[in-house]
Every structure is written in structure tokens, then in C-alpha cells.
Length: 81
Image (cartoon, rainbow, N blue to C red):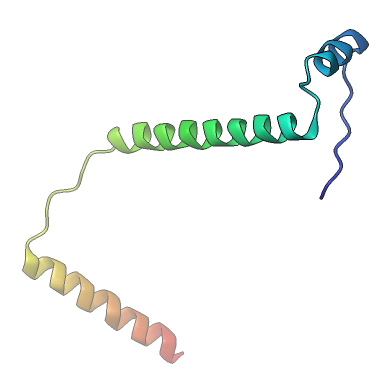
């Protein structure tokens, strides 16, 4: 367990304390919610970036097989050294 110390204006700290917002359980839930929201925002941001990228043309199966064979040959060469 980690202890975190924060500095707040006195009035805000008192109001938050009276409202029960500074209890460990409430703070933990708030932080978990914030982290989940952040992950969702990052996902949508990544989706927006992906939508802005032009898709490459589809490769014919023969071209794909040739690319895979080339990649495997390069890995074998790299691993041999």
C-alpha cells in the first residue's frame, strides 16, 4: 500500500472531507474511474489516428507468400550471426 500526500486549499479540503470525498475508498474509486476514462480517450485517439491513415492496397496471396519468405530468410541470416 502506498501513502500519497496532497496539498489543497483549507476550505476545499474541509468541504471535501465533510462530503466524504477524501476517504480512501472514495479516492481509490475516483482514481480508478479516471484511469478507465483515460484509457477510453487513448483508445478513441488511436482509432482517430488509424482512420486518418490510408490503407495499403491488398496484396495478392503470391506476393504475401513471397514477402513472408523474404522476411524469414532475413531472420535466419540475422540469427546465424
